[in-house]
Image (tube, one colour):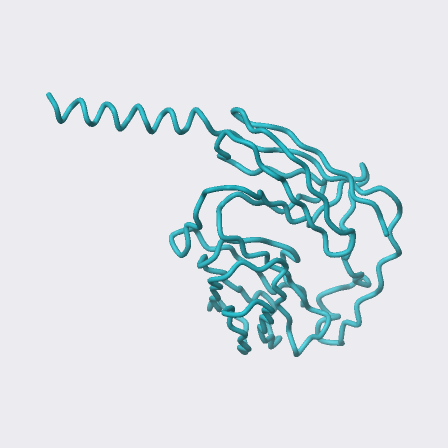
Length: 230
């Protein structure tokens, strides 16, 4: 009887924890018109993969003004990184670009690099700026083999580059908790399972800057932002 009571109590605590958490959603918009994107200096080999000219994607703006590739995170959270137990994130080298261009993961979480460009050699060169996050430089041939990286310290927009193709960059924000997101092409974002409480929502775009808002989560919340072209 006592053992049954303990199991019942544990289940109740678990259900209450789930009931006191929700999704934090919102949308990020861009005010103003960004400067025109520049054409990438793609070489002849990579040019075969792009019948049309390929521009940079510093501003990923939808027709409705939503801004993609914005890093969103919470401040004042008590959650801990799931580390290597979290499912790996995947970045593909495809069309002589890193895809996605902007992503995020937890400290200790695996970052798997794919290579989907047949007949083309890439190298993967992360260049962290936070002490304790190791720099690396690894050649990568086409095929199913993955290159895997992990970083133990939080760092925003940790850069990956290819020295063979100097226009290739990707940026990964490494976070020491699970409450973060990167905005979709239409500017929307969702951070799932946020415990009830008061937080600061911080956003950052590589070109449009930063913003913060206070929010109270009660079974979920909605918060929208507008960044301005500078």
